[in-house]
Length: 371
Image (cartoon, rainbow, N blue to C red; front, side):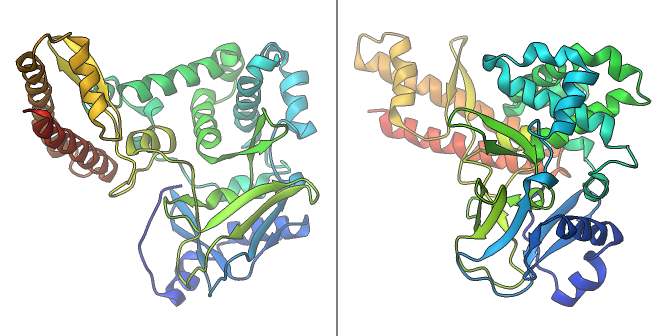
């Protein structure tokens, strides 16, 4: 689900990228089972790693583009999925208490996908065949230990640790069972990433979102300036996607994953955005104390650091701000050195440029605060 902004000639789309056998089979399976896919949209198969949707012709605001009935989705509300987790593998029942509802729901989907994705007679075979491949370069659970140490320099430490914790938590209760499956750990990793990057929240109640895989709808890429909105329609019992603005021919159909910076997008979804409007937080050390400066450049964030040292005079206050500025300035060569090492990785480039922007903004703010 990588965001792309390349423009191609329309007929080239049709000849080269669209309507592969796998898509034709997916389309027929979905439509025959009650789905609606507008004739105004088509999928693009840019590579084995990347699928997305564009407008085939002019789309006007409030047009319905997709309807995906619940019987084509994969979630724990589906008896087939739920029974696999509760009958075939009872250890999951221990996760089913209310406070662990999300964990049960999520882990169950990962387990189900692991054992079902190679099932040639699966109800969801046509969906599985159209899933893009996973780039191992872009997800923390595939990083080497050396890469993890490297990426700590660009503020990815917390997100790497977070995904490792979630992955091991999902794997731990079923590891022995997964090890009995040929290439089971690798299949579990792929399933874990598919669920973490492609699932939608279907709200069962005000407090509970149910993780759900929704064929075709999950081709939507993220954009801060998105042009569609989706929701689960209880009366029609399915997911609906409609346009929220006019969309021009060849324009990509996009949604919003949330207001996330590049570090979060990369660690959770495997992509970044050029000139992301939500800049990343940074960590600095001032007199051996570590502080985090968050995305929004605000004077009170620096002043919180200053207050931490209890300055008695204005000169002491200014001295601390100067130390903050120096710590910030020391970050820039770190990012530039890192860029040289990973100059061919567009995601790392975007993250480092994003961090540089944040650092420079804070340096500018330090200059304004010093009397």
